Length: 145
Image (cartoon, rainbow, N blue to C red; front, side, top):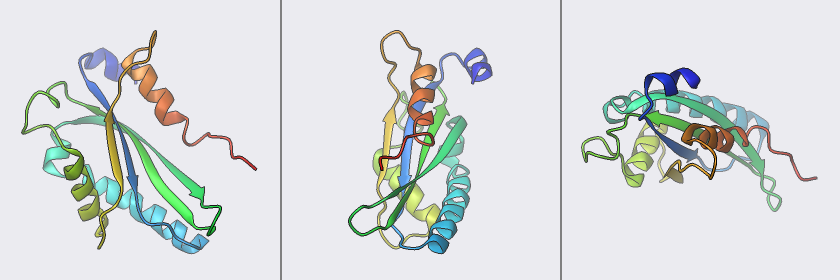
């Protein structure tokens, strides 16, 4: 990360969450997590995504629905994009475009939930420190028992 900041000090950071439907058993969960990794690799190769992206950090999160005991699997992605990402309509990817890219990459027959936000630094922290904190908290969250 420090190298990216040194080489691309004006880069911008996005926090992207990608989801798919809940599943009910471990085999299906493992299959979905593998498919999500494949789908993400495919999505970042799409022309509009690839031309803007400098790099990314990805974390998988699985939560259990306490009512129906289904598994909710999703990806949290910290994306580093070129400084021109927000300045040009040809570069900027709208929320609905991210959703369509994810749907296409995953070959889904439904519209998945996708969220994208620009990282805004918290007081006394840099963009990257805020972004890393936000992304890193997911794979290490404590589970309430």
